[in-house]
Image: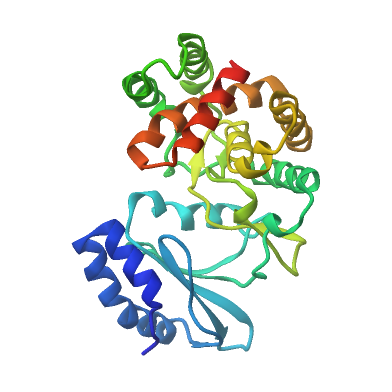
Length: 299
């Protein structure tokens, strides 16, 4: 049996408790089962992310691939659905799947991401171009972002109270207005749902391919917020944060062929919601303060 990295076992149990302990105990058996079922042999040690493991393998025809098994969490439920809908269009190819146990056999890409590119403007443009390519008609069985608008509106108001007066009524009102204006009726278009530089990998078939989609359906501009908010570290170094935010949003919007104002509004919502949720999620104080600042600037 393969050996599961101790660090992954530890963090999974710390985060998930007894269900995580049971799941990681079953992982060696699951890996062996899927290797046999899909005719693969291990080709390198296991790598891991926050919620799953990735094992480089060689398929029966000699081609490289990766076996990915994720913790059975609702946030991972629609990854295979999204990859199947794209069928390799700007995303890694899905070869095999077992939805009940969150297992997939995927096209192998390189281990370098857009984070490693070292050019934030080029990375932002690549992300926008991929977002446009991923915007295909969505299958009917995926979750609609529009169905979450009422929940967003309710929880944003409730969570903002935990921040006290740090988030102004103007910024809160701007976020709520966007949810009311744009959130309740959205197109039936595939969106990644967590599109940031770390989820875009170098590949041979195409220069860049996306991984780890949430499998959402809605407004393409929704993905703009992830691109910017996940770039917190580099944005903190900007001399003029508002100008830098708008500049990067312009690059993304032009590449994705969306309205800049729409992208700005979704980013303002995401920053406001991120600041409010940060208290419950245990984010560092500076992250919450930064997101509040972004929400205020863009309001």
